[in-house]
Amino acid sequence: MAAAVSDWSTLWDARPGWLNTASYGLPPRLAYTALDTVLDQWRHGSSDWAPWDESVTRSRTLFARLIGAQPADITVSSSASHIISAIATALPDGATVLVPDIEFTSNVFPWAVAARVRTAPADRLAEHITPGTTAVAFSLVQSATGQVTDPAPIVEAARARGCLVIADASQACGWLPFTVQGLDAVVCAAYKWLMAPRGAAFGYLSPLLRERMRPLAANWYGAAERDSGYYGMPLRLADDARAFDLSPAWFSYVGAAPALEVLLTLGVAAVGEHNLALANRLRTELGRPPSDSPILSLDADPARLAAAGIRAAVRAGRARLSFHAYNTHADVERVLEALR
Image (cartoon, rainbow, N blue to C red):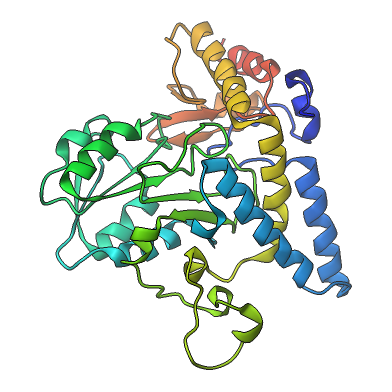
């Protein structure tokens, strides 16, 4: 049974004032304990690596459940940009990729290396998809401003033009319920709202997209049968998304699996409601209208926030605050007191 919302913060060891999940999330105590145990095993050589690797399989299955996909369509990596670079191999010569005019570089640079890049405002991407557009890539939630992008009109316009649709969900997975329906790919760095150690990342790759991709980072972990994939030819990669796996950083997934389990137990929709309630209370107190994002940017002195014990980020010249499951109304009060 999920803990009552009033008890959520007891699942973490978060110090008051952490409002920077958009930079990195804090691990649930279960995740930190699991990682600490495995690090001790590594230190003493008291365990084989196989139990650590089971965490990768668990994490893949849990992430698939989170976004309404099948585990066979999920690839694992260490960064979102690596997965996007692999997806870029599906582009033909002379391809054009449409991206928002404000977009994190991990969802821009891989496309710029492989194709011509055009930009448009995030809320007008659909109308800028033309017959010459090969793919459109965007973030479901923009990292600097928290702007949420509805994928439905983009998917509709893209299908009419026959182009690919790739969504970066690094700032969405963990609080924003969505599914992969209509999307060719979804990538997610897991160290933010999924609260995993940095070094774990997931990607949904549709079967039709995989047919166009090349596994340029092919390795032993993507073998159809790993026990027979340690040495030599012939090439024998898995026939599903595992063919695009990067050999995993085991410890990152040891922390990822229990973090995902906690998140799914609480419920992504419930977490999203909790996060929005806190962020919108702050907006209301500051005389701003409510929004659909737990990320907000303020014209506030970062030093003043830091002096009040608020750990936030600065993006695009503004203080960026972000609320997650371990935050409480006391964090809102702390911000208000600092701004007063």
